[in-house]
Length: 396
Ligand SMILES: *Cc1c(COP(=O)(O)O)cnc(C)c1O
Image (cartoon, rainbow, N blue to C red; front, top):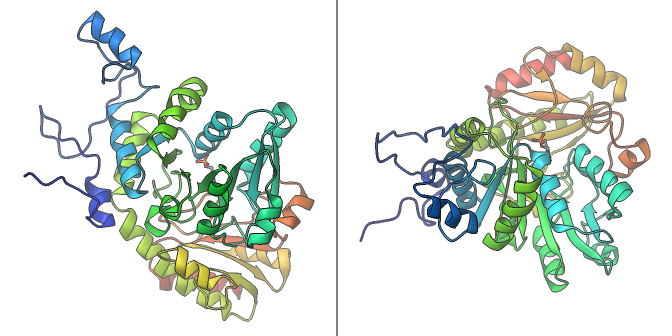
């Protein structure tokens, strides 16, 4: 019997390179063609009707599906160990489609203590305009989790590690509590990528990414993906994606397919570099504190080892001189680039209080643990000695 390539017995990199591949029968093109077409020709009028009715497979219109997007979606599903996946025009398009697709007025969404700034912005809008309530709670211990669940809680929405404090949430514990109460668990897995953490294997229902970050990996595309059970993904495709319309372009899908092929080897290097940079910072006399799950001093180091296959490429730290010293240091960097975003091959550094989280009111920021002096570093894949040398001269 012919062997299916790849199957679930294959390793991560083999799946990343080969999953979803459909060799073009006409040209034999090795790489995935970019089907830059808005619409698809029906062979007959009857076939067109059958495709609209869902009685026949085949493409109709790119907002409903496109062959280049299908390859990307199959790769993401295989890597996240999901039945199906869906591509979006941005990470926020994925977040908003999931929340608008699954929530109703009167529902409550329970969130981890820290959230991506624009996710917080969206929740604020949902509350003000659509009577969908939310609360941010400490989900790190079970009693606090259970006491935060309300009778109308419909989704538990988690980021782990939490942006930018790196605090972790035990996903298996969340999934257990949610399942018993028929609550849907949604995990934003952007910070780790499926190479380092697979929430569905831990019992969560939906996983999403800003594919702009590690999945794309090269700082040249804005995109989002989500993965989960086929019926849930089909429901989102035919409601929140189709009717709200945050569809990814075929060219951008091609860039993500290309990025995914090196995801595993890039993540290994991000982790290796970040560990050494975190150790350098932790031992530097000008540094007050370092938050990195790979440091033995990190309070949840044991959970990190259990839940994640590596500690990731993101580090937050604070200088002894607080915000003023941090600003001075960031302005002196030469190799490391002062920019938001993360997960690129380049090392990027930013100041959450004035940049990514400036949308969050100061009081909420404090509750999230984002002090004014906190700096976030996304360690790239340059030679680590060069990253450390740049940080070292800037700290002088
Ligand atoms: C960047 C990011 C998002 C939003 O993604 P976009 O692609 O910028 O829309 C959501 N969650 C996290 C954790 C992110 O880092």
